[in-house]
Length: 232
Ligand SMILES: O=c1[nH]cnc2c1ncn2[C@@H]1O[C@H](COP(=O)(O)OP(=O)(O)O)[C@@H](O)[C@H]1O
Image (cartoon, rainbow, N blue to C red; front, side, top):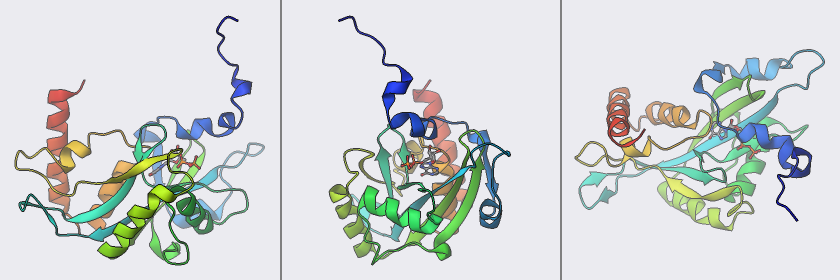
């Protein structure tokens, strides 16, 4: 039988969610307050309302030195997603779920986080955004844990239900820069990140006093210099 492109209607469950995972433009992410995101029904009359999604950064202060030279300022957990983008664990809320309940459910499914030990609450909320393109209200959370807890959380990720499917593996952000000013965090920042995950990462690095605004700026400038030389 001749090869034939499957019709979109044959993609099954993917057709319902496929739009959410698509590459997107940074301009479409507008920061809003948590109250604004929660306080009204988003979407025009007669259209399906926007959905909520939540993602989270788990980190611990570090201090270990790479080759006895480069101090790793923190262990920050991200992940390689099914689509090749780097992001934080989390996802879209099911109907009727509160955002924090749905976030804890997603974290258990995606990284095996034990909700009896590390449950996320409103206290951990950092930022909210709306993206009209994807009709999503995005919420971002951040939690500091001890280094021991962080390493244990990281280990559990490969036993999670979604490991090997939606989540292809945990990733640590290199929180150091080698003395060529590029290898480490600057080159890491040249990766492809889903949604506004890169901005969320940098926001939390500053907010949690892991690096100063100036240090982050230098890393971003060195990332751009690297990209100008090696990427098209
Ligand atoms: O780490 C993140 N930070 C910010 N937005 C994200 C992140 N990960 C995903 N998103 C956004 O949320 C949408 C849905 O998230 P995700 O793909 O995790 O949901 P799902 O696992 O329920 O399908 C993505 O298409 C993207 O726009």
